Image 1 (tube, rainbow, N blue to C red):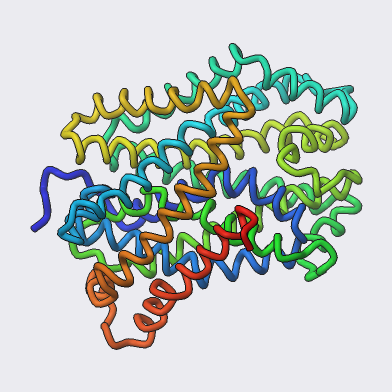
Image 2 (spheres, rainbow, N blue to C red; image 1 turned 120 degrees about the vertical axis):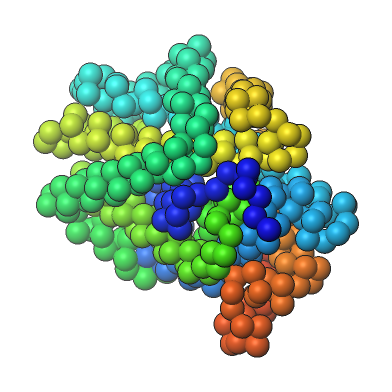
Length: 437
């Protein structure tokens, strides 16, 4: 029986928009372009898209189904569906992962907010590449300013998540996501009109093996987990908020995964033609957004306008992802400890700062939080989720929850991937990350 007091999305569209908003955040707009540039362009994109379809959709569907079946947030979901308390540890891994991600990524939010107002003020005008790199280093080391901007972001986030799902994240998601796509498409169209832009498109879509390697494959797999947020608690929590009787988990997961691929391609089409048009390095790594792109906007006619629009798009994507992460933590605190929404929100705020401020003050801690989140919490959570759905809770229960006939070819395919393919790939991925393979 449905818990009438439990928060829920107002519609299937609300679930889809909110979930896409989480998935197309920093991982897609910031991380995807630079890893794609580093690891092979078009061949990397193709590998990533294949992983998203073959591995991402089944695992994302599995995670959403756990929330749908249990109507609980991660720890209680695993305990309820297994009937055994120790399985709650997997849910705890999910929660630790999202708390870490929501915390250690907050410096990036501060950087983006700064660039939103620094760009139209012409701060980067007249600077060469070296000066822009030096500026970013000096600015990011100004901890007082960055923390102040982080607090601005936290306040904006709290203004959204203080409301229930339908009046908060669902309502603003229906505004932010279309706005993001419109801005990105506008920048893509503008960039493609520049001389030399075609080289960037060629890089993004040509299957050139020159920079592609086994490391590229591992990176594409890691990007799949990171961009979809598998085992980060959000998909499970949002699944628990779907209306009773909504059995569209597989369709919804497919829509979300395809939307993430689409935005990743848009991000590549937005950045690579611009960098190639001005002869800049597409393999610039993490500094691509904050060090290379200001050079682009310096050389671009109307660059102050386009640069500002670019960083607004970046912030929209990051903010959409951030409010979803906060909502997952708030939901967990409300379910697990009986907190009211406001108490859960302020507790989330404190948890974010406990991780975020040290990550801002120390590059070493930022990198440590990034490593432990992506290499341990995320991979361990995804591995044990696969084992749980495939072998403990069972594929039959999974099929019933998502409304697909148990004997169908689709369920057999999903079951095979969840039970065998995904765990094996995750083990290989983990061993490779630690240099053991």
